[in-house]
Amino acid sequence: MDEVKSSADNLKSAVGGALKEATATATAIGGAVTGAIVSANGEQKALNSLQAQAGLTAEEMAKYKNVLEDVYTGNFGESQEEVANVLALIKQTTNETNPSKLKDMTENLFTLRDTYDYDFVETLRAVNMLMEQFGVTGDEAFNLIAQGSQKGLNKNGDLLDTINEYSVHYKQLGYDANEFFNSLENGSKAGTFSIDKLGDAMKEFGIRSKDTASSTQEGFALLGYGAKASAEDIQKPRTKSQSSKKSLLCKRGAKRL
Image (cartoon, rainbow, N blue to C red; front, side, top):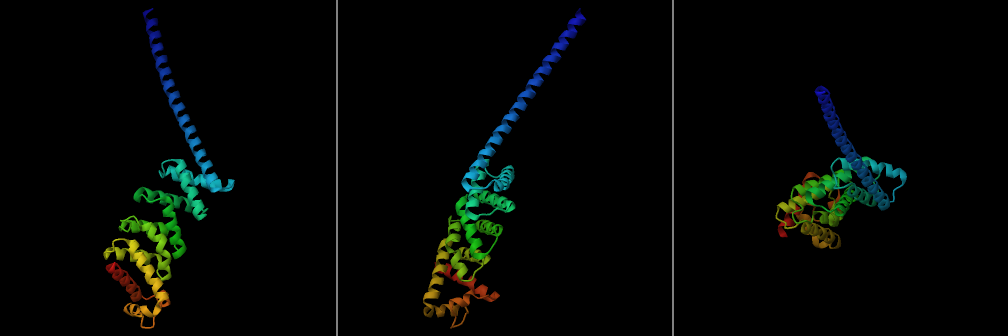
């Protein structure tokens, strides 16, 4: 009888342990299922928001769904809905539909926001401006902004505004995107308090060189363009020495400021 009782106790203990283990496993599975349901609901809510904001077709939604998942699982964005909002903004601003480029642009926007606290809308405006004025790609535009920020061009919080306001004027004077940023860096190093001031000085130079050409001949001569130079001469393809003169112009303008 003692042996039977001992066996029964052992069996009871074993069954009890198995039941506890089974209950714990069921709880874990239930939690995982609940989490999956919540995640699925969150993604669907994000996709619904994206489609409503951007007016996407069913075919376009398939592309955007994959992009949203790739970006979010790559640890960009605080939620799927935030990623969806950025994707909608990109669609509204650029009409880009290539999934790879959409992913890169979205991740670049989050990187600049998280690193420099740049606003999504203002960053996209600046990127578009660089693309339209200088013919650079989206990746090149993002890289220029990131590199300019690393070099302190946003120390007064006006880099994006300067790009948006003065890109067109630098383009009219014959600058390309790299020269534009180099001039801002040169001016900043030469003592310009704000790169916005430098951009404004270049804008005024461009206006006066066109409207009052006779009064700016001395200035052109100082830049090495000859006594009969015009604003159009500055916009022609430049030699290395002429590019250096433009850099000198930025430095002189910065010192005056």
